Each structure stands twice: as C-alpha cells, then as structure tokens.
Length: 157
Image 1 (cartoon, rainbow, N blue to C red):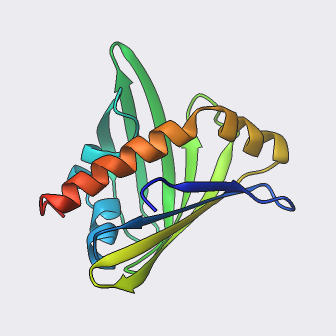
Image 2: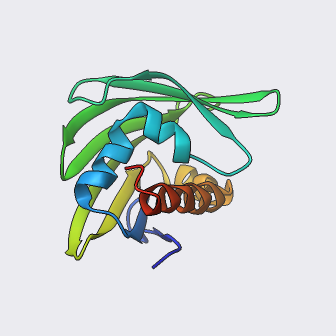
Image 3: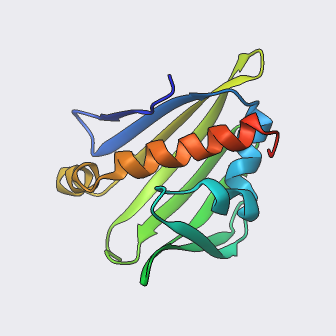
C-alpha cells in the first residue's frame, strides 16, 4: 500500500487514512515528533515547511507554516497525548480558525521493519469533512508520505 487509502466515514464526520511504510513504529513516531524530520516530509512537493513551535509531549503545542513561493499557510494545534504507539492532537488551518479537527494516529507493527499508519480526523460537520476531501488533501498526504518513505529508505529516521 504505497498510496494512502483515504476514506470518509458514512456515519460520522471522520476522515480515515491508512498507509504502510517500510519503517519501524519507532521510526514513524520519531518522524512525527521530531520537528526537523517533520519539516522534511510534511506536505506536497510544491511547499516547504517551516516549524515555528513543536513541543511534541502530552499537553504541548505546535505550529508550522507551509510556504509556496511568497504564499504562506499556517497550521497549529495541541498535542493531547503523545505515546510511542499513538499521537492525539488538534489540527487547525489558520485560514479557517473555526475548523478544528481532532486527529488520532496509531502505528501498527507489521513485523519485518514494516508499519501501518492509521490516522483519523474528526471534524465538526459533514460539510467540513467534505470540504477537506475536496481541498486536494490527498496530494499533500501522498506526496508527503512519499518523502517520508525516501527518508526511511536512506536511513534518515
């Protein structure tokens, strides 16, 4: 599964993302909690990521800016729970400050140095969920995860 499977729940305003990586759960956890690593893989190829705050501990906060040319897009949130097998955080695109999502990620060990990432984002309405899906998020997710694959392949995690 080298492309992320992105699914909308039919009964709840949730987006679920599943993707396999040739990396250990510990490596994926580090890629999501180390700000220098995160900045290297987050988002579509057309952007760079500038991490402005990254306190990846339970109760910590984060903010990063996606930069495309002279355009900047801010994102922020709080880490509610950070454990080696699970990260729970809020996620807000600053262009839509009322649109707060609750995101949960888990890292399933598949053995032989492979891990399945499970992520889900709960938003406040079906309209918000569908707007996320129409936003082109799959490009950012798939291009970002391809960069994460490349980091793992060259031993950078």
